[in-house]
Length: 314
Image 1 (cartoon, rainbow, N blue to C red):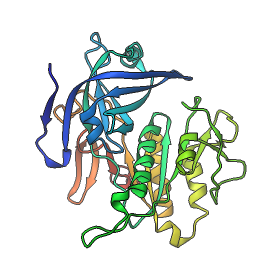
Image 2 (cartoon, rainbow, N blue to C red):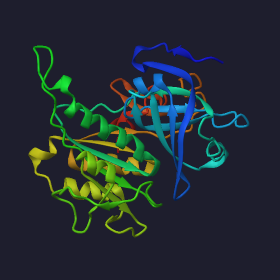
Image 3 (spheres, helix red, strand yellow):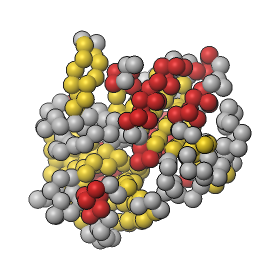
Image 4 (spheres, rainbow, N blue to C red):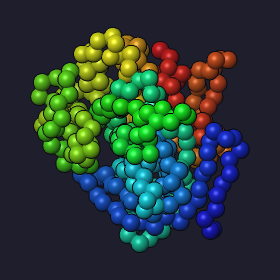
């Protein structure tokens, strides 16, 4: 089937494209983790932090797999996804080689929305929930560096001086070689200095957590480190914080609890099994609190990002 645009019924969903995406690179890392780079120009142009792509892993595997977009490169029409082998579908995906094509639907879903009045952005990723945090950090950096946003007009405000902090947790080796950070982060526990080198190069502070005893990492859950840092802030600084989280359900529930404890805004990206991923089957529906009461929302197109207090009220 040739590439085509699938026009969805409701404007807030945006546009989803079907593309024959060429494999540009496929790198393997410790812990059965892979970074897959695909040439998907339409998806790359429209992707936002928190959106995902639905990939056909192999002709012998009928169901697609949803993977968060880690980076989008509109200038060269490419996207990157990070995944870990879980089940036969993603195991089959590991066999795809450079030059081959993969059928891809994307970008799908509503992404994270940072608010200018809360410039202290706390990005919390656990395991395969790390990719959207990298994408969001890069997008915030681009907004600060963009020449087009540096000159305010009557209809455009000056660029926000975002102050992102990225916290990542993993119980398997990280898909990069961690190193001591060159960026000081006030409020960090002593000895917590390991970072993601790419973020350090971007000038964005990051810190790593694990229960596996990795050097320089916080010994504990990533939400514990988030709470430790938030606890170092005064009331005025806390009013400027907004948390963004992606990871397994227990981590997201913990992130929502931390947000309630400190009275900060929090957006979470949910992980659910999906069949169609375009809103037709409703197989990924979750209970969400709305102004008119509880309702079932589809993670694929109504999410995957939701206000934490609407999905984890207690």
